Length: 343
Ligand code: A3P
Image 1 (spheres, protein in one colour):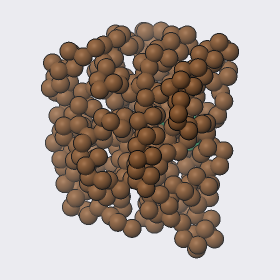
Image 2 (image 1 turned 135 degrees about the vertical axis):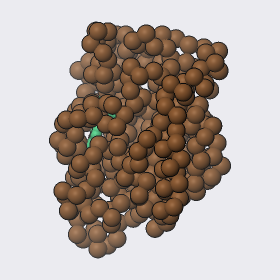
Image 3 (image 1 turned 90 degrees about the vertical axis):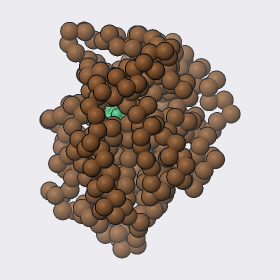
């Protein structure tokens, strides 16, 4: 197993401790992004179109969210290393779950999954165990991943907009998890309503649906984001793994086994015999993580329980009319034409 040396980890940590705060970042890039096309988002915020994708303007209304300023800062400053591992997702596609699984797999000798009370995932939210590269510039404290055997990062940035150093470094691997667009939409609908300030009221499904179909969700259009990583996975099949949330739900054990192999941490025969794989699946299960994260907020200020709603496939049918469902099917058919992406 390859590992980041402690000095490399602490250097990067110290570097991130030096960072400016969010308003400085926004000031730095505001003049540039104010020239970009923009549309109204929610709560008096704008969404900006940058390199073909939509990003929030930032601000502190919805904390912990990717914003255009932090993406631009990551592009300018993030330094990748060849031993890094990146977990890429569109928000609401299973990011939290993937973070937990990758963290548990890579660190399973350091934190025994069966010594339950000491495992970081039993005391911390997965988002506090493993950072987003687009939050590196804002980070003021280390995460467990800084001490990890391999350096794990997550990102919502679409493949073509990743910091150049990630592409150039030939990083070890990128894992992408994609989810049925209707599942993403409904999960997003609930998430934003949970986070939105009460004074703004709540959003109705029709409104969220309409914007989603126009591609206007953070890091959207959904379809372009998914395609960007799908294409990259075809170009670099040994470095980029493309998973689907639905497949992970249907066959968690087999997918976790594949994930461990791809990450370079395959389960040994002894581990298989001792049920380590099953322990990891259980540790990272929706039931377990939602129980651990019932209270409190993440370091980014988001209620921990906002990341755990149902963890099921197909709940969209309780919210979308047949007409809405058909519209999304039609867009998906057109946008994914020629791509073997199924859910
Ligand atoms: P639902 O809102 O459909 O329940 P993200 O982590 O990208 O923000 O995605 C959140 C979605 O993943 C939510 O979907 C959440 O419930 C689900 N989720 C979180 N942890 C999970 C887990 N351990 N297993 C399965 N799904 C999980």
